[in-house]
Length: 562
Image (cartoon, rainbow, N blue to C red; front, side, top):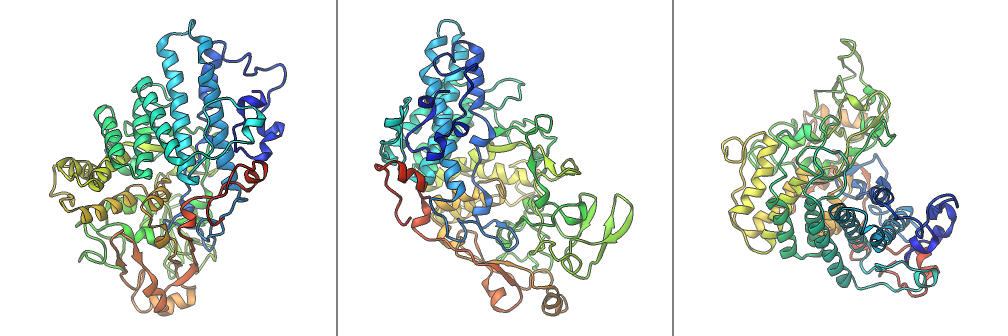
């Protein structure tokens, strides 16, 4: 594409280079010659769904995540306008928005040669992408540069930021246009383009981020009323490589080894299986958030035993975090310092246990391993092809319930939506209330706590938590709590193991947001502080505009505090 076809105001200065602009050789198409037939337009639409344009929100920015002793610019409050992620998300998002704009403004070229239904699908996808990507920008940066036209260089480098409320209304309109134009599905095709349901669902998510609960309720309900989505019956199996295109998934980025589109997973896998031993692991904060099987938090339930913390927990706990003494990737997983040997089911023999720190220094620092979606397909090259799920029906149900709770419209449909999600985790039907802890609370404050805990249990390590803690305005609480792990081996044996306190020496208190206070264990000298999280409020509830954008456009102002 020509420069003026893809530069949007506010894109980074580095994008002026040929490499960044994806300029085509003279033998290939430009915006003047392109979009002349169905094939060219279809190629342009498919290009909008490249994985680089859909990075999602990283769990490393949240309290669900531990990376040994490392933090991110979000979790150590050093985020600034020169951080690579700030720049890449800004530039790639504007790049795909510009391509959406160009596509929409050129659709007239094929009006007389392509069936109306096909044109509607192309147009609907472009509106969906523009809406979803502007939604990301508004959520992260607040007021943003907004344009639906093709800009020349002078215009691009002189535009001001538009008030986010104005942009918000335009985003809603784009989602509505997409919903009106897009099909409900593409049949048996695995092509993960947008659908009517995706437009409704992403509109609901953005509306919740903006605090527009009535809009979120109506959009989520519209998705539910399509009647084409259902919860996959087995929670653990939902995330496996072999589970392709289930009716629960509304929008995803497909991965494929054959197409060299994979996800590097070695950091998540046990050292016994050749991984790097929980370099990336679920945090103790997340572990303590899972309710017990009576539906109560661990500090209220008589079923919770801190020395056997996986017992009597919501099934999503073991589906997300590998239980101790369980078979995982054909090894017994046990981080206990006295378990220097474990069973290797590949050989049928005991072997050195590299997943305990008494043997391997860099085994998991907090004893936990990630489990969601992990299977032998990830071995031996440590590249996974599980689809990147960006929206699923469970989220729509819980978004609907949350919107209704916040509006004070608590009725049976709220409990039906929440219990459908919880019952599925237990592998039973919602009406089997004797087989799972059905949600029955009716007051707003209690249901809000249950809803927030339910979301955390359901979506652990799915890139959802960051959006939740920012929109709930609890990031300043949860990201100003330290990250804890096990004591070094000698102290661990003396103070915890030999005292009969393995694995957790105490039961922490859980607050109204489902958040555990782990500091008493540290103050008692029974756990180790791995890192000190920091979050500066209100500053960090918005990201900084990239510094180079401020330098090249005098009409751009920076967000407060940066």
